Length: 154
Image (cartoon, rainbow, N blue to C red; front, side, top):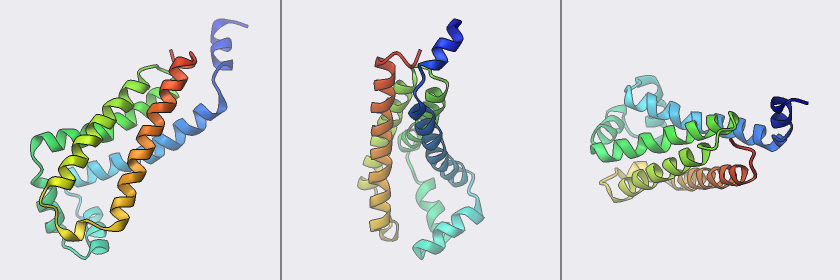
């Protein structure tokens, strides 16, 4: 067996499952980011309808983000997508990408909970979703670190 075959044999099945599931999950956040930043009316209209606000109110809030909050949001979203891709490619920097995502998530969470956010945007569902995002990024960072330490990630 050559080096490539032995390296592939070391890859546990759960890496593929978690890598694919996390990529799909975090791609949802990337889609939300892109649709919001490009002011996609159809996408934002669905969100507005579910919250009982107008699309203009959503755009007003998100366009009012200071630069640092927008950068944090981007780091949170794209760091998680990069971490998932790097995990699937078995590259040790997956852990670092997830840590970068956590830093961005921390900044965007701080901004969200300290900004003048419209009351309609703060729902139990949104709070639960925020907890799920935190749990998933922390979990994937821990998993990537474990795979890095086990020598699965190069």
